[in-house]
Length: 314
Ligand code: FSX
Ligand code: SF4
Ligand code: F3S
Image (tube, rainbow, N blue to C red; front, side):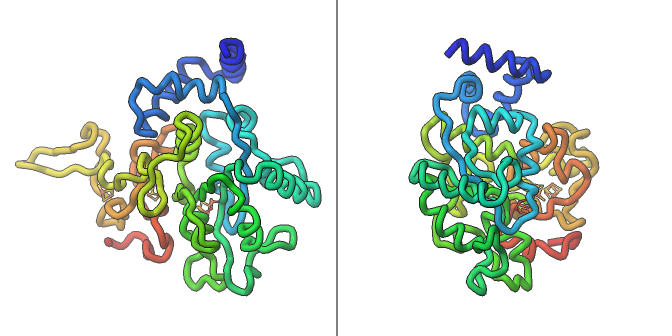
């Protein structure tokens, strides 16, 4: 175990990531997951000395691959660490070397070999009209693939608003009858919406599973409460107002409020459940409202239709 750990830290160093940076990441991840700081060393061990590597089958349906892109650019774990050390990715169209019949065979073999044991991650929504005719991979409709693979998984994670709720492919007039994977085939999925979702919420979900042996607690829409338990507005640094001519902000400093609330520019923060203000994007650099753009409600059910026209007050 100790040998495994020191080899892990050596690999990190060789990639220019110090042990200190890694522990900082684990502290942020532990806080995001809603666990007390006493869990930080245990969270670190999930990466440094994983006891098990759950097999993952990652399916792509109707989407833009932004969810995979967001994950591939996650600061840590670097995707190769995530792929090779924490998870055993058996099938993922964007990153696997196999193509054509060989790729199909990989999928078939993985589902057979790990039946009842693998985690299925679904990215993108499923066309349901015309026998699923509006979306196919290798001559099979998304609908058919979802029906064949998803029920055999130990758990299914719908990553991104498309897979969770239908998302952009399901926007009006939606001729193909696109919908979220759970609704399309009548199963319960763990939903990580966002267009794109924040990769830290996938990592948090997986680490929760590996550390505590179960999936995190969910709300009535299948979203982990640790990430989607509060609205954007409830955590927003722009939530500031004047009181007796005094500038008052409940969250952070006056500088952090950076000007004023974007509500009149159409901000959907008050009706959007997500942890963007805390988790942020691009290595914790910023998030839409901090960058001066109103939240467009990208992680809510029925995004896009119920959130447009953007820039109009709710
Ligand atoms: Fe959807 Fe993923 Fe939006 Fe894109 O692939 S959640 S279109 S950012 O990224 O599925
Ligand atoms: Fe709420 Fe949006 Fe204003 Fe922030 S910018 S306080 S989320 S309405
Ligand atoms: Fe999406 Fe709003 Fe966050 S637009 S990325 S939920 S701030």
